[in-house]
Length: 330
Ligand code: GLY
Image (cartoon, rainbow, N blue to C red):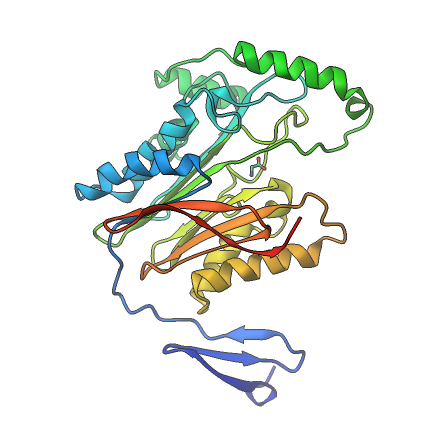
């Protein structure tokens, strides 16, 4: 398409020019980041992020690396056996197996991921070991478990007795779900964490037990690089929580980071990702998806389909929960 078929709408930021083509599609010229980076900060999805941030901050505050901070941070949530959506305290799938998904990505765009992993206490550390010790990005199921055991990772018996009791009750009450592969909508509040360290380097981690009472073998967005998490150290980082299937369909976190690359603020980038999800679903019943992002300059954004998403922020000056903006009320 020829240049003259575009018409200019005006400047949005110093470096960004927004244009629309004749079809009305918005186009952007790539933003050049100033190179100025923010101070150390860590962001995590949901209330469990407060505790996780505390552990991450101990590392960031001492001048440690963002990748070490995010691993240490989400390990706190994975180790919390009262948490029903992350780690070994998580709810099982329909067949009674607690299968865990996690991924990690660092400032060099190195990444590691583990999915459908059973009986290992810290999937995020397995993901990191895959990143650092293998030539692969992702290991799943029995292969992931074998790797974890070979690496000396601790095992853990799942589901926990009280979780098993709940699952049996749920199974009794939801017999119809087994007749065909319907979805159910139990909670699945992943922890996604993104951080910037004192060098301005970005990293992220994401870990979950996934959708409670999911079909056996189901994997959500959380271990999928580009869906549940994406980091590009030149641009920014994003993570997601909510209905993994919807997030995967739009490569959610990658979409957020690419929007930032082309000039959107983190807030606007999260809003655009939500908008894309809205446009892909005729029926938005229970399609709750949430995005959290930071750019290279330390600007932050978050947006969700429905009200209710919040995130924890910790920096030298802040330690609090923040409600995200949202598109609609339930
Ligand atoms: N977002 C977590 C999952 O869908 O498994």
